[in-house]
Length: 339
Ligand SMILES: CC(C)(COP(=O)(O)OP(=O)(O)OC[C@H]1O[C@@H](n2cnc3c(N)ncnc32)[C@H](O)[C@@H]1OP(=O)(O)O)[C@@H](O)C(=O)NCCC(=O)NCCS
Image (cartoon, rainbow, N blue to C red; front, side):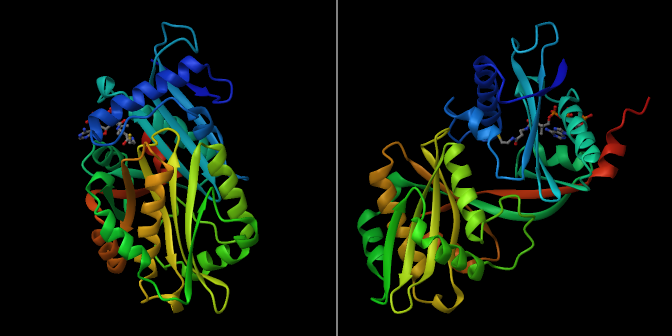
């Protein structure tokens, strides 16, 4: 097996296809209910980052074949953002427990160390081998969320229609496919800033609360094949954004969308805005995305009001989703060959 650094921009189409096939084997083994990926904008999904961020990738492949012509059996990416490195590792289910995952983490950790990063974070999904794997490498659990999934075929659309309409006449609900319009960016970013909840999330999925960062983030989403949809509640007497909800439909698996932020600004809480904007979002998505079958969302377990609204909409808890972290220097030391 050969592990080599992999430049996504010059990788062959065959290699990208092979990575997608391996990813789909991983999904079938570890997350059999998740939809497989299509080979659509996968290069862009992996190569495009926010300004100031960098992603470095390595592949593990058969060393008997020339570079670029082999199957991708394993893959690791290191996303360097701010002062933290975020790892993603996958190994083909047929080649596990031979030390390959460990070798991939070692190569990425060494680079993070050389680049001067002191900590590394990773998302690991409950009830998959990733949990014992990262724990065996000394990673520590830092945060947990629950993923819930809504199946559109089970939705009571009439009930949803009344939820979408149950909102005081002070608020106007607006739907914006593609993202908030330019003239609302400032107010939108302000709502994100004011609505942020204090928690100790590692911020592996940072949200954007200043207008320039928000603009960059929307542009990056589009380039990666992730189409944003937004529903806003405008407070008409003051013209502020009182609440917002964001869903992204990925070109790589358009049958399952991802719920991003839902925020209701503090002084507008308690008026049912959360329920109304999320219901409106589902009604709009149903028309806009014919391939869509499910929406997934992640919530902290202490966020009871949001969990309650999600349950009313029909979301079912699926799995725990963990963030683990490790000190880079310790990790490098632990992974050094001992002979
Ligand atoms: C986690 C993953 C990368 C591990 O790859 P791997 O090549 O099997 O890992 P290694 O062989 O290097 O394992 C190193 C150590 O981790 C631990 N470990 C790994 N898998 C384990 C398992 N299934 N059960 C218990 N311990 C395990 C063991 O301590 C192992 O050492 P050992 O084999 O000497 O006992 C691989 O299972 C994978 O690709 N999982 C999916 C990753 C993922 O969730 N991707 C995102 C969603 S698709």
